[in-house]
Length: 528
Image (cartoon, rainbow, N blue to C red; front, side, top):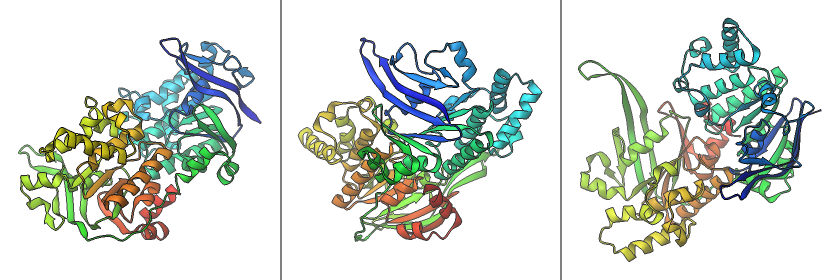
């Protein structure tokens, strides 16, 4: 039985000059009662715009629906109802979970107040009844110590806990349809698994239907009954989960599926380049009146490993496991205890001059290229900045030649040199960040979550680019990620961290095929 039927849905946005951009082009699909419809595609494919149109959340009149568009729910065409009628549907019959809960929750109000408000506004609960129901909802969504957490503010909760609060608010009125817009994108792989399981359990308990939006086919595979694949505002493929995954017809669907299947080619390694011996990093949490530390956090706890020339070590673990802290200590951004040797030199014994000279040999690429690139500098200035510091004797022409060669190696063009970061997509900005690191011809590149903010097909492109650069330059990589698929595609060896401690270390395939520790097994199971 069809609960929601969308026919010939087209959505355009008016520009200031009177022209329009088509965001959704003649879409038709239906949602069955008690089923999960997965909508998958890259950023800009029209997924969220389509979902928001179902609740009248688009910025009208700037947004315009096509004349033939219809959205039939409970015998009504939602494209023709008034705002007053929509208010009875939003939150009551159809609820929406947004991608970033921190932006959606009010930072000034407690969790209790925000969930209670939904119950009092839509269901007319008294304060006491709303408080009791809020506690029940928070427990249903798996929040530990729910009674205590009710008094917390959003910033006091983890990403997974905030997402559970959003789910509690969305199901408070027991809607017929729940729209989940990228609800797991910003979460660790194990927390993703928990949220997916939670949504499936709630669907069964409340007999709901779900529209689940994601750019990750691997997530869609775990949750959906039927799948829509979108690209540039169009549905390029739709069908049952089994049909789409086992017999995909459209080249784009095949590309999305194959993006998860990249593997690294084996090759011989050179001499040892880097060695960590019993590295510890601590951060003070409390100090007494005399400034003495009375409580501290051990972010990295007694970690040791070796890295050879041309080899990649993947460092994996959940948020807070110490991955980024460990990478930052290697490059000298934060102090550490223990020993770090680079080409048999103890880094802690080097003078400032020696350290500066060594900086060009160890470079880092950060997670968010937009925040790591100076918006006031064009691409030529950003990429050449390191050359001016480490090779001041180079002429302008020599610098330009090196910059051009390096950006072309990362898949960019000469025309891009005079542009600014905001003029590029996320994948292109990450290529710029990689070029900035490569310009100094380093021996070791630390890659800190370089693909986590990117669509799955762009992730695959960046991983393939990094593999090619490594082979061409015989570079060593430390690849930091919570994404087990990216780790498997890039790594020769894997270091698994939890709470700053080394849980497991070994050959990539051995870790994936025969993990020894329960925590590693959980990470891999969540990624499958």
